Length: 425
Ligand code: S3P
Image 1: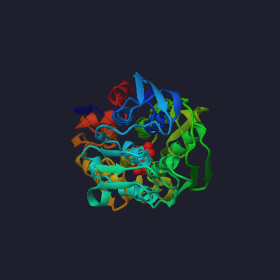
Image 2: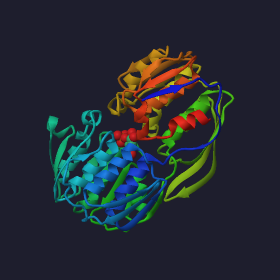
Image 3: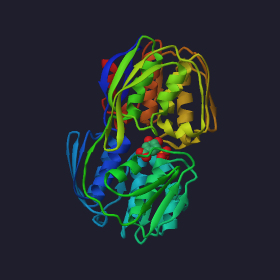
Image 4: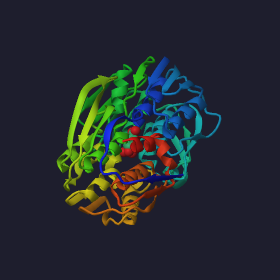
């Protein structure tokens, strides 16, 4: 598929974005491990979250999908059955890494794989702690890559000091901790998104939280719940950034999750000069939600790094586009994690923006951009990475002449109606 984007002087309007990907995955996971029925509203019908559903169905869980409403008949912590076939996480790192924690906790044989991008992404970061807990893995490069065979069950709790600030690693270990004897704790170097912790508490599982440490007691049983999934901030980010960098724009994105561990982009865009307001703030299943209103301006460059990075990691591709248009120098550091996402996002963004005429310097852990630079329409490639495709579409809105993004079907992974919404604004 090819996405064609025409330049626009500004964008205006009120829009809704689809459900949060991270929360949709977790709602299926907790609904499946709970006892009794869980109902999920606002579920993201993207490809990644469908993979999580398919994997749990393969392990005997009945899951009914009616549009954005998903009903799960949870069977409790001991209720999963050995999958009869290889589990396929597709492009979804969250499915693979969170499920590995659950497979490790179950006394059966399973094999999990993914698409060509996921089969090249590091799994050692979850295999290491899970091996320390007592699970066994077989796979390429010392079980560092999918496909992985898992022999699970009989886990012991550990205290795990994670070398990476990764919500997938933290969540994987906490999920395994649910099945383990005794207490499991994870300490991360800086705070990553905390949806797993919030959902554990929402489902009634006690956890202890202290700064960067989360602790859970194994074996705690819990019942099904109703989960309302807010709009995905990471999807809203494309619209927010497009509005911020096109002076004269005035856009409100309704009903978006504004968990503080996710919205680092808003702080950065405000520092760059955009006018951003959170309206109608409220709380739903422990997650903060708001309508986000953005007015555009001529942005200026910023320097970012450190503990801010995990709070905007998925937004760096689109932030790079804002930096190209901003006045002055932008420096993004401490973001080496971008190299192991759905694509190497440092390399792919620099390469594709280069096709549009922008000069972007790459660092081992980030990017340096001197702006403002004028973009010209070009024929670009998504590299199969949904966030790269949508960031390039935002760049296309500001370019001279049409931009064409090849291999754009990957947008369905997280934001199926992206094209309609962008064209409507
Ligand atoms: C996610 C965590 C992040 C993020 C990904 C979703 C999650 O990955 O990039 O899109 O749902 O836990 P890492 O944990 O690898 O940083």
